[in-house]
Length: 428
View 1 (cartoon, one colour):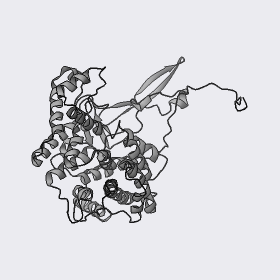
View 2 (tube, helix red, strand yellow):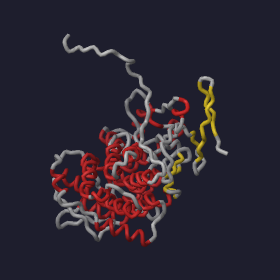
View 3 (tube, one colour):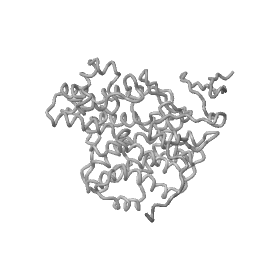
View 4 (cartoon, helix red, strand yellow):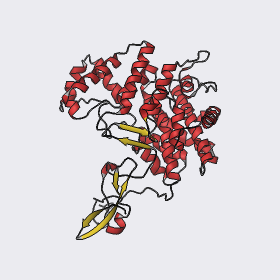
């Protein structure tokens, strides 16, 4: 028997079904609310609204849990392999060796973009934001792959997913090289996913960039930890655009645009700016924390707390260990990392932050790691987009095969003028 809740309105009672998820989370199904009652729900920011049922990612913000297809993200730390995780998200299971080899081969063979697309890069000013270029060029890819305007079976999905995941790093590297006035570096088919991307970013003619194992693992973990995060702003955007049956290229390009915002993908940039402000202002971390606790100071402690996680962010825990390994291997001193460590130490022992559950989140360490690898700040959000792409593809595909797909069409509560008579003011 289906559980229900009772809604009482104007003396009438309505029975609304309760839906229970795999992990016991419960939701009131209001699919027929308007049809049966004439009412809609009002939930600005959708903080209490489930837009879909999904089998991809599970988050428990109270317990600090993040799982991809049931696997805790901490389990990817010892053997970080972004492509394996991408397959898991998109196809619902870990790949066999045969599936992994086949997918990797397509990634390698499709890393180049059409030579004609190089002219598109020349059309952007060198000062163009890399995220603007990334969104535009993902859309442009659809023009070169008309065979993927409709994706109707797993083989097509595998083919288009491989091309997008492979080419997004090439586009990102080209955008960076364009902004620096440097020559394009073509992908190297002998390199794996992360070393190949860093090769395209940093190699010079006759001077090839070599990626060591620790850097490769750190970068893979960064991409893995950003690969999906349930119904966040950009993923919800991809699903909304895809609900109109827009192709995968257009849908993912919309995700890039949503991620561009400083409240979403740009959060780690704000963390680095804060650390730089502390360093340049010759402030101690203790002094900055005191200012951050003062509501009238205008200072904010960036990289602490999370809208979803009311406890610790499990991704931050993994990245903290990753940062330690990376800096130990590089034997590189960075005053910003020292400031970050001190801020973490202060806040974890300060009752003000502990009582409010303001623990370090994923953005707190990701910017420091990217800085250590040599990624410029204006490319931070681009790296986020590369990592998040498999999640976007997975959600687009999950929605695309739904038995009862519906175009997303939120309602509103109108608060404008009542019916008003037209009186022209042009002749006055």
